[in-house]
Length: 184
Image (cartoon, rainbow, N blue to C red; front, side, top):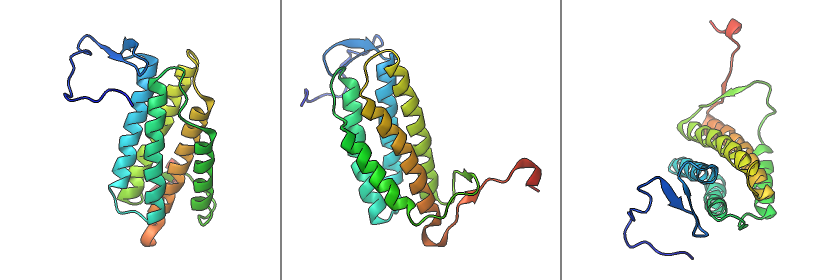
């Protein structure tokens, strides 16, 4: 475990740099900081979903996901360190299959919405996609654990399916996209 902060501000970043987990300093807009910062944003968005009323299985899945995202952020903060095993990807796939099992096949595009919890989940999904893009950009320039990229890809899929589950919960419905020439 790293150093514990007794004060939140340290003044060490006042000139636009930040410390990585290995002790090195980089610019706050570096690809690595952008990647783990977006993971942090994603984790906050998942927390916003968790603040809604949710079925127990969804709550358990997303709570586990928050811990895994914290591992992923830590991994990205420490170059050359691996904290995200392939089993995290497998776990997302199992959850994804379980939640998707009772959903009808998609025939139309779905708009983000349907319920407040579903809309929050869609917001988290879009942030997951951005986080994936940021980590891929980092991987073009530095070594990145490939399981981390797969994890983010599956997580965005999982969040899409969970949003569908939440939109349909308690008799609700998904909001289907209607092509422009068919809207009145």
